[in-house]
Image (cartoon, rainbow, N blue to C red; front, side, top):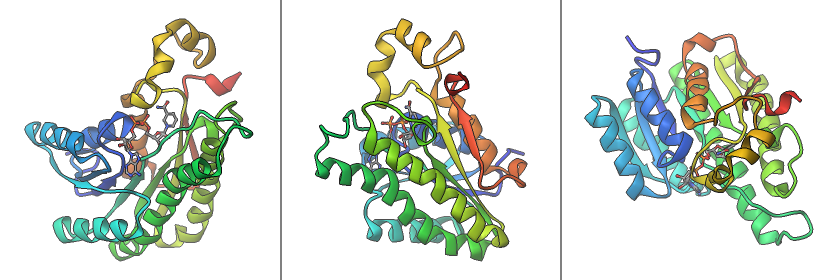
Length: 248
Ligand SMILES: NC(=O)c1ccc[n+]([C@@H]2O[C@H](COP(=O)([O-])OP(=O)(O)OC[C@H]3O[C@@H](n4cnc5c(N)ncnc54)[C@H](O)[C@@H]3O)[C@@H](O)[C@H]2O)c1
């Protein structure tokens, strides 16, 4: 029996990086996975890999900024698998801009994807979790949601808001056995951060206390724990997976 046997999980931004890793790990641990992404070509490769490995998953094209699409994704999940137990709000984009450089259009775009997209997902999935008798909401924030980061102000603002929003939702819905936690990765090797990993020396000096890179599986195992009943007494918490970057 897998650690997620019997659970139905929606994972956004699942075509690449950590979302793809989480979708594969969840399926391996017995979950029925609804993997969504705006980029459905690459997403289908993830679904094919899961199926070839004996897992149960569907892939759906989804822009997390669209309220209409969120309603459809949740309805399709319920039609296909009968319920929703877990939502991983993982889709996100970064922005390498300082406050004074940033255009307001860019601010709004980052807020729409990194914050509002998660809010809409939570709004529409919570009633389904209430019907199912509980659930686990996992919001992928960042170290940038805990400490300042130069040149990323809209990103850190969105990720910080996601952290506090997770705590408020945990307080609001604990009575319904809905747990809400945020995850705070450090710099992890994915398409989003590919440039950072070109210079290993800088990575080791700046972003970790450990003598190796952080990879998507390192985060996926933390997310798996939060999705499973192993974390049944954990809500409103922050899971930091950063190789000790913020320990200094
Ligand atoms: N990589 C890191 O170092 C790092 C660190 C901290 C937090 N994070 C966060 O982790 C999450 C995953 O990051 P990653 O590094 O795996 O990124 P990634 O770029 O590898 O993957 C992100 C996925 O989100 C999808 N996406 C983008 N906009 C979307 C939209 N509007 N609707 C639906 N899907 C959309 C992309 O197509 C992509 O597949 C993000 O929320 C990111 O902010 C990443």
